[in-house]
Amino acid sequence: MQVQEVSEWVDKCNKEDEFFDLERKIETTISQKNFLTKEDIIEVVKWKFHTGLERKGTIILNFIEQMDDCEIKKITQEAFEIEEESKKIKKLCKIKGIGISLASCILSFHNPEKYCIFNTPTYNETFKIETRPDNLFLNPKYYLNMLNELRKFSEKYNLRVKDVGKALFKKNCVESKSNNNHRIKDISQDERPREKLERLGSDFLDNDELLALILRTGNQRENAVEMSNRLIKEYGMEKLSECSLKELQKIKGIGLAKACQIIALFEFNKRSNISKNHIIKKITCAKDVFDLFYEKLKDEKQEYFYVLILNTQNCIIDKQLISKGILDKTLIHPREVFRYVIKNAASKIILIHNHPDGDPTPSKNDLEITEELIKAGDLLGIKIIDHIIIGNKIMGKKEYWSWKED
Image: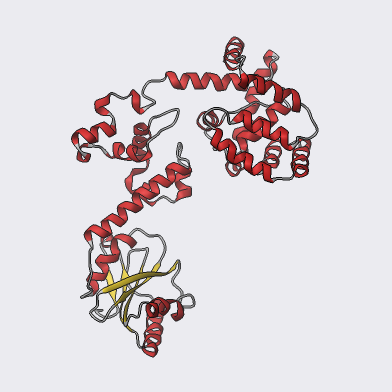
């Protein structure tokens, strides 16, 4: 960006309206103060979350209103005295509701010669970092390098860093709007996923189009279809289905909302498969139990220990998760196992757990747990008719192990 462009883009930003008037008022009020009051912070929030973002602004204002004014003064004064910039912003984030983007705005108004304003959407997409403190301070070089580049440009042309930042923001906003096919609406109507599904049915949609219908929106760089296509090409359906919430949020373009949507999609699919393919009301053999639990447990990375509760005719009353994690006989206490059985007035149960490595061969610990629970069941008059260990048939090993049948 050249100095002429900065001037042009700043002029486009600084329209003489209520929004710009508030910006000038804030800068005049808080520039170079030793500390900020609660009212100062509230003014910055109102400026940041203007038309269309009032709801989010209200949430942040509620957080700030709950804080004591003296505490805010203390935090801001300490922040302004800190030399190291990442620590300065981290300190400002101690104010409830203040994140990286808002902290940057506060610094920009306090010292416009040194800092610049980053508006959240462009800040996320252009500079590839999240507007959350944990991410910034794990990777401080991103923010600092970005700021230093703007400072070099500002010093060269004797400009305020804040103005250069605003110009860059406006330029990116306009350019992103002018790019082709960054919105679903820009795709021809016949090729839009929703219209295509309505016209032809779901069988005619590719995987990326189906995922796009779940995600609904993309970002400034790509629409929902483009984002879905990239996710499937780079990670594949299988790997996406195995990612945790935190792992998904590390993928470019995926925030908390989209990560939750993807998790929910695959979990719903898993439960649907269990419901559709394994509707078993009565247990007649170990294979029935395997069929009931295989879809649920085949890809789990931890051990899950379940109790299947039966009536006198071996019909299923309920199933209950007892523990999750390493199966340890010190953790599987008979009290936890039989509490649900007694509550349901049942007389029979089956124990089930999985081996994440796919091999259902019982360990010494598995056998000891089974024997101890059988003894406890006998004392209570509750019969343990089997203990099934779920393996993974895809790995070419035995599908399951049964205490009764093996």
